[in-house]
Image (cartoon, rainbow, N blue to C red; front, side, top):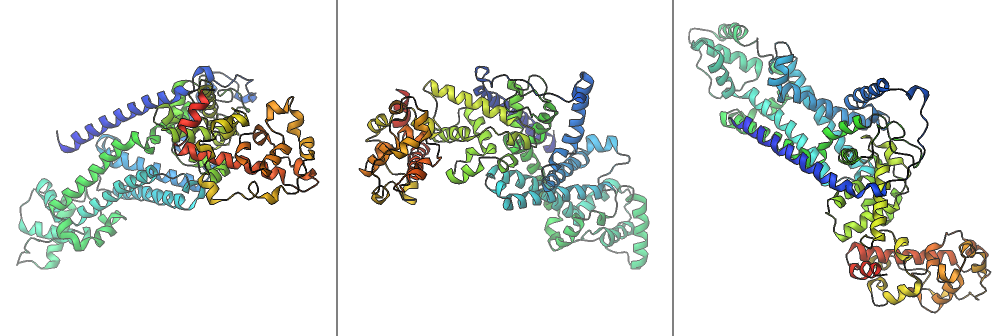
Length: 591
């Protein structure tokens, strides 16, 4: 078994093992969306008359999905022409190289007439496909450096995938260029295929290949003394027409490799030697093996999983808000564990969902990457596999509860992943874990409303909640700590009387802890930390009635909003830095 065959078998085995590990890990990840916490069943959306039908129309939907979405990626055109161009260049170029170069012994020689890799149009097409891939990589790099939505979601894995693809293609071009100028390659072909040992014919053939094919001869054969250069060139062309043109086209048709070979001409003694070509070949092949092994462990797995998910969902999951996931075009059983696994793994981390996320502005303020759908999906996989530390679990929970379930991410996802269904199921599971005391509270509202203001003050009077966070230090409080804010307050209770939250409460003392007027009074006495957990602070709807009706012009609503931000910043800082696990989560679970 030679190096190529053995290395390919080992790489394929590692690739298959990686996919098996990934699927097993993902199936564990979707267990958080257990059947006990499925979204409630609601009425399915009505279908058009033309969409009703039996198996025939179902087959047509799958065929349409395969032709338009898998082969031609038409679903990307509707979202972004530049994105479609990038994907098409990468996909079409790489498939062309795979079939007509990497698998030429399996595909090309069996399907294409008189195929030889050094004949046109195949030599020309190989260069075209290689340049298509490089153009796609360049466009991908440009987009990730310039498009705001992509810049904030780009990870090292994205750059590594692009680097591997570019390295494989570039090393192939360098290898082909080295072969063009290599005398050792010429000598090998003469020894293998040229039956004559006439020195004049070999010298003439060398002259033709030096002049017309670009070979650099560092040790040329001696020219016969009884022949002029023109006669020797004519003899060489005759020999070339007889022995070489049937399997070798002009190397100039390799419009990418040939100019590169001219640039590498000064290095011909090194690159063109047998050792130089062999080294470049090993580098190129090893990079290909690395790409195969890397497939299941990085984002390039979507090359297989995204088309599979497009076929699993031949039409986009677009039920009415809250409808069953398979109500509008998906096949029955869309919400099964297997379909969820495929959907979660089909993500290509293109960032389109994050670009259109309706709560992306919250990421700009909070800095929690898991608010963005593309990063939240990654966190969902890690949570199911038990790979989140407490800080990461808090960030995932916060990102999950910030989601408004607006369906935008599912609408724009080019892989047609039913993200909406994943978010609903995962949030229900998080709430179930919270109810059992084992979950992480990722939303300040959900944490603060667990206790009364007095309980918060008692539990955390010596705890980390009452330590100023970094956010408070960088952005000092401007209202709650300033006596001037409350000097004019006469405790007239106007703010309390006009508050709709107070009016809606059956028992304001029990339900809200403190009224707006009482909060202003406590702040005036310097008891800010004692009102941070008041449910009135967290129940305020910021309607500004209190502030608009205050006869003394006290900024009541602004103060309540600021208090909420202070408490939220402290809770987030403590949770994200693992400072409050002992305090907040343990004591919260004991309530």
